[in-house]
Image (cartoon, rainbow, N blue to C red; front, top):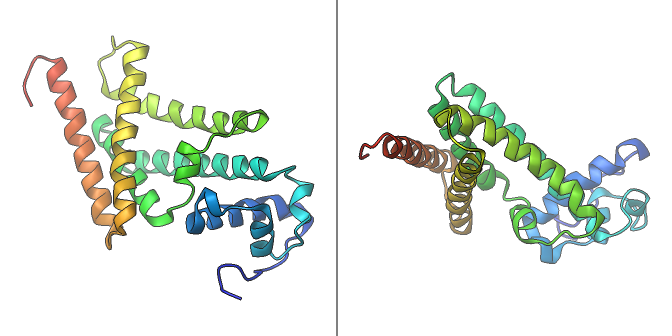
Length: 208
């Protein structure tokens, strides 16, 4: 039996749910959504194939829990990066681009699930709650950068542009398995800083 599928350890009932989410995220990093199943997650956790159903009624419920956990972790990672960047609003926002790229390259877990898998029905709301927290954190950082009279719609648009640029960069790099995630993360932060400062200069009628 390969190391990727061998049972690891049993979980007590109290931490089984969290353990299944951890193992589910690890499985997603290896196989993507297509290779994800409740039985495989149970095997990784070292529990019976029926045990996960005490906490998750079906595959979609477990996938939704994994997606929500990934987004929550990303939110915390970005918030920590902004805090470590200091007081300058541009540095703080640019740091989130580097942190996001580093997270994707280091973990390679669940990105396709978060962005491309259609989690419908009651499970969609679980993911949406964490997505709103991520968006809110970025909104605060963007609002600190843009002029005070910037509309809510323009602030949202800047959040989406900032995140989509970073996500696209990190996702493309993920396909090539770069050797130095830290260097690529620094490039992501530098590119984000250039975009932010260029945008601010255009707003003030200057050229970058």
